[in-house]
Structures are given as structure tokens and as C-alpha cells.
Amino acid sequence: MIRYRIFYALILIMLAVFYIYCDSYVPLLVIIVFISLTILSVIGTVISSKLITVDTSASHSVITRGENSDAQFRIKIKNKSVFPISAVIFRVEFDDMQEDGGTQRKLSSTLCARDSRTIYTMVSTVHCAYIRCRVCDMYICDAFGLTRQPVKKGVFTSHMTIMPVMAEVSVLGSSPSMNTDDSDRYSDVKKGDDPSQVFDVREYADGDDVRRIHWGLSSRHDELIVKEFSQPISDSCVVVIETGITAETPEKRKSMTDRLMSVFMKLSDELIHSEQMFSVYWYSKQGGKNVCFDIVIHDDVFPAVEGYLSMKFSDELCESLMHTEPLFDGNDKRIYYIYSSGSCNKEMLSRLSEKYIPIDADMIIGQA
Image (cartoon, rainbow, N blue to C red; front, side):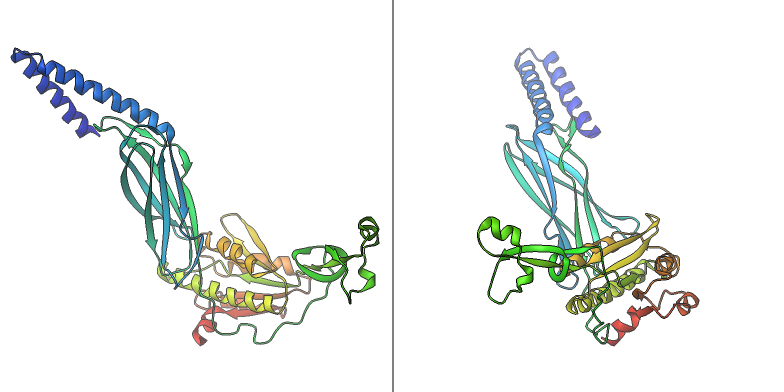
């Protein structure tokens, strides 16, 4: 910016000197036109900065590691003004939410009047991750490079989840028994047989139990209406994922996360197929609390993985176990504890009560 201003000032000085020593009005006319164009360019830049918008989005909100290791983002810049933009300059930051620091890139583009342009940028990774793309310090410059105006309208941040590849080896070995304990929570996506909660109503069909007939609605609609009951959500099955991961390098820490998430995906798949609803817990040192997600169907697994991948690593061994163990004291919950033998407090692990079912992610992945 400074060098453009110096260059612009030198041009004006040369034109002024030429006008002084030249017996002609041509240099003066050139100076007037030059300054007028400069003023028009600056005014156009100020107006355009109010009418330009940016929209940052991921090409896919969720991808699977191994299918496409590049997290690609779209940055769409739209100029709604009648002035062309000579330069749009901005900085893009990519952050893996589990790691400190990230990568940065400086990009630029031009825009015609009432035009839009889409810029694609990506970052490569070989691990599952929750990637944030953030557009920072976006501004537009006038044609002479004398001024710059910040762009403030639009979406400047987007996220992408790179899901782990599911482990191939069975985690449960055998299907868990169904739990029939009472529950005060019910699924809003799955029918069941609990008559205490109505899931939906529909027209009567041959073979329906007459005890399910909704007599009030039937009399109102002059046709038989039956009730669909809800499926209770049971917390009798719990999955605890370790968040205390220590390793010599960030690469090894990420590899441990890959194994933990791969095993969690496989365990979730097996529990859901056996029609066992469950909750997943881990301890977040950032929030200073235990995080919980209820898993009923496969779509519920994605937010849980995203939540886990959006936390920073902790160096405290068996951190999740240490903070979630008091939650389950004195109850009969079946608890699956997913950990990495490469980063584990063996003494604490040996104190697990019989209700804990430890699952070594390193051993599971090693068997694949």
C-alpha cells in the first residue's frame, strides 16, 4: 500500500514539474483527469465495500477419511455494485480443532461490476479431523492502490468433518442383550411398544390390536384411528471415549484419535444394529465438564464424532475414565470404555469394576 502511494505521488510531482516548465495546458488537463479518476476509484471502492458479500462453505460438510483426504472449501465473493473491483485481498486460515496452530494462505481476486466469483481452496490431511476454514482480513483496494476498505458482510467461517474409516473387526463379539428398563425419555424417530408414550397415529389396518384404537380421534374423524407407541431411550448402555491422549508427536496423537474413532464407529454400528440405544460420554478439559450424546440411529453418530474431534487434546492419562467414573457409581449401567493402550494409565485401568468393558482400540485395529 505504501509503495503504491509513493509511486502515485511521484507521478503527480512529475506532471506538476512538466506543467511548470512546459508552456501548455496539456499537463494540467492530465493532472485533472488523473486526480478525477483517483477520486472516482476511491468513491467506488467505498461504495463497493458496502455492497460486496462473501459466503464461505465446505464443498461437503462430511467426508470419509480415505475417500477424499482433501478438505475443500468454497469462498464465493459477490459484487452487487456498479463499480468494478481491481483487487479483493484476504487471508484464509485452516484450523484442525484438536491441534494448536494451523495453516494460512493469502489469496486475491478481481471482480467486474455486478459479478461474482468462486474461489476453491483446500487443505490436505490423512487423519480424521474437524476442520475450520476462516476468511480473515478481507478488504478491497481501489484501482490505484491508495486505499483499502474492509469487507464486513457475509459468512466468513465454515467447518468440515472428516469422518474415520470404520474398524473391520467386530468390537462386541456377540450382540448385547436388549434392555427393558423403564425410561422417562422416548425416541422421536423410532416406534416401539411402550404404551405410556404415543409416537404417531394412523388409520386402522387389518390385524391391528383393538387395544391401540384411539377412540377419541376415531369418533371425531368417523373412522378407526390407531396409536403407534414410542421406543424408550435407555441409558443402561454407555460408551466412554478417552480424551487424555499423550504421544511424542502430534502425528502420533492424531493416529491414536483415528483408532479411537474407528472403533467407536464400529461399536456404534453394532449397538444400533442390535437395537440397543445408548449414550456416549467423554470428559472435555476445555469445558471442564462431561459431554454426552444420545445415540438412537446412525445419523446421531455424526454429531458425536464431530463433537469429539472439535476438542483439544489433553495430556492427562485416563482423563475421561477419571471424570466419568463417579457418574456411574452405584448403578447397573453397562459401560464400554474405549481407550488406547499406547496412552493409558495401567493402574487406573486395572481398577475398573466389573461393569466396565474395556476396549483397546490399538488391539482392535491391529487385528484388522
